[in-house]
Every structure is written in structure tokens, then in C-alpha cells.
Length: 333
Image (cartoon, rainbow, N blue to C red; front, side, top):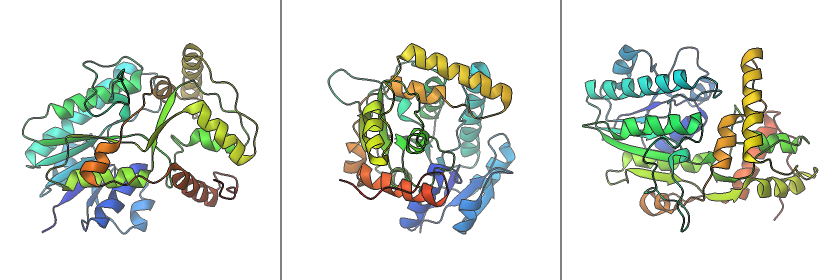
């Protein structure tokens, strides 16, 4: 008999790929949704939807009734870094609400989808799942929030908690243009400002598969990095500028300059109710990015990472159909 799995945040970018991956494993999940959230992706999949709001304990109890495993992708994701106390308090409160509901509903397993921002650097090579910060890293609000929430879930008693750590996702379905925003800006002929540093990347379909298998396999590791490659951001943008036939990107900015520019952009965005051109979260992730080893997911979960060229081509085709992206170039080696 297939387990009953609830996916919180199922209508998000990675969440939809997790739903697809669970179905590929012959599991039809319950798909948690909040009021007024965009569920077109779930409707197109004819998914089983249930009301689940992290600020409504009764809705969480109802959604988890009879559930064996919860996959939690709905952790607080701040749009800006301008309200540190409020952001950390909300992330902690919602995390404890999920754990409390899981206990009340007798859920046995919980997969929390965190971030590679919680992976600490090492001196002798790529970082692995064993590399952890002993305290909040202090690199920025996003890093500290993810570390705080991850620590809360790892400390949950009487729950089989597993932590998934997906890298920046490049692939179809990124409606909010998160990690892929710099690529889209470059392809449109803009010269996106960017800091110097490393980005780690993964196809969202591969991340979804890894998360689904963490939820379903009894012997899955407790903490798994999902990353296909780690590359210098400026070098990646330079290669892509030639692919798209646009000018070479400007030189990367020093960390201090990039942080100040992002902070100014976020404060202006808050004042004008617009989206910031430069986000502090991305700046911090690049500046403090470290090479990552994603082979545990291959060895223990059977994840086979797509080549980045395939993920990029699929993203370009998808984004072009939606009008986000110029017509994609012919495939090049």
C-alpha cells in the first residue's frame, strides 16, 4: 500500500516538480495550498488539493490527518531582507507550527526542504552534507533564516526528519524568475549587475526526484545536497553572453559594493511596492557560495543529474513560450 504523503508548498516552483516525481514513484500526494495562492499548475495536473496554511493550526491538522509523510517546501521565503526580526520570528513560528501539527497528527516522517545556504565551506575540496555551521552564519538574513529553520526541524523529537538541500534551480517552471533572473536579463540584452562568487545549480526536475525519494525510501540519508555543478557566476554569464549574441557582461562587483547596491534596491522596492532589481539574498548566496559535492544523491537515491546544457535549453524553450525570454538560440556545443 502506497504511503499517504502531504506536500506543503506544492504549487511552488520546486513543489510542482516534487508532485510530478512522487507520481513517477506511483504515489498520488495530497497537495497543500493556502487561500488565494496560484494553483493553476496543480489544477492542470488534476492534483488532490487540501487547505493548509502555516498560520492556521486547524488547517494543518486537517491536512495531515492520516498522513504518513510530510514534505515541507512552504517555509518562509522573504521577498526582501529589510525586516530581520520579523522575518526570523515568522520563520521560527511557522516551523514550530508544522512540527506541532505533525506530532498531533502522528506523522512519522518529515522532509524539510532547506537550502545550500546552510552548507559550510571546507578547505580541502567541495563541501558535503557533513559540513555545517555551528551557529547562524551571519552572511545575511536569508542564510540565517534558513539555518534557524533547519535547526528547528533537526531538533524535532519523535519525528524522522530529513533535510533536502537543493542548489539554485534552472529549468522549466520558474514563474517568479528567481535563480534564472540573471540569465533572462542577460538574454534580453541587459547588463545585469552581479557580485563575484560561485553559484551551484541543479535542474528542478532532478531536485524534485531527490526530494520525493527522500520522502519514500526508508534508508534515505538524513541530509542530502542536490547540486549538479558549481561554477563562477561571472564565467557562466560570459559563456551565456556568447550563446545569446549579446555584449560581454560587466566586471563583477566587490562584495561590499554589491551588498550596498542590493540593500538600496530592496528599500526602494519596499517603498514603491515593486520588485527589486537586485536582491540581497542572491548577492549573499553568490558571495558566500562554495563548491558543493552532490554525489550522495546519486549514490543513495539514484538521482541522475541532467547536464546543465539540457536544463538550460529546456528553460529557454519554456520561458520563450511564456514570453519571458527571446527566441532560444540553436543548440550549440
